[in-house]
Length: 249
Image (cartoon, rainbow, N blue to C red; front, side):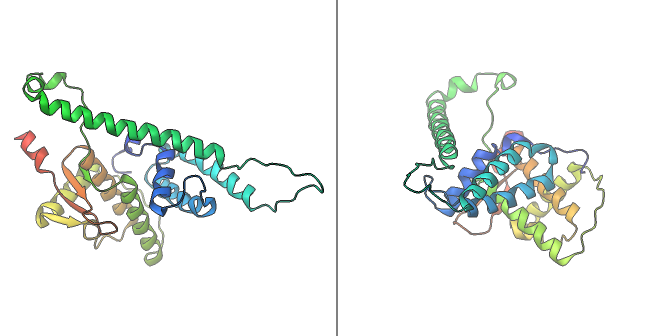
């Protein structure tokens, strides 16, 4: 598919990040996770990931199995032996501990990144004297107010709509990823800024939807385009990354 292009796993941050995203999105208490609802949503995202690349879903399937086990356990009728009160540990407890640990780690990473950016502003001249080829700093993805999982959710909806309107037919697509990237850039350049919905407007074939979505991820990774969501629940806007253009000039 698309010239053997593979999704960069680093962009997804793993299954715990997805789970934490769903909890925040649903605005539920991390200590009292509605496991049935979260599990159903989690599985939808895993299905979308499997569509993109089967090689990246191993860890996600392990987490899915854990969620399914907890969900099944909590659906079982709770019976207690007569005259004996037995304290049963909440099966979600281990998962909550894992989520809290990851949450602390992620928040610490953001704090350190902010301090690093502030230090670079203070030492701008010294920083610029370092040869470009020796700099190993990873560039921040140009995603303002948008989470990678937001993009995956919209991709999943597109695929569902396609399955409902067009008969499913498995076809092999050997179109190079670069060709899809050029198609995305042409659409963005033509409209200056284009919504996620309009980017995929008129595309009915599942293989082309996948190709355009992978191209979108790659262009974001390369800092060629930026995506933003000014208001919560509004459509995602896609535009050329002017900073990247200046860097190449």
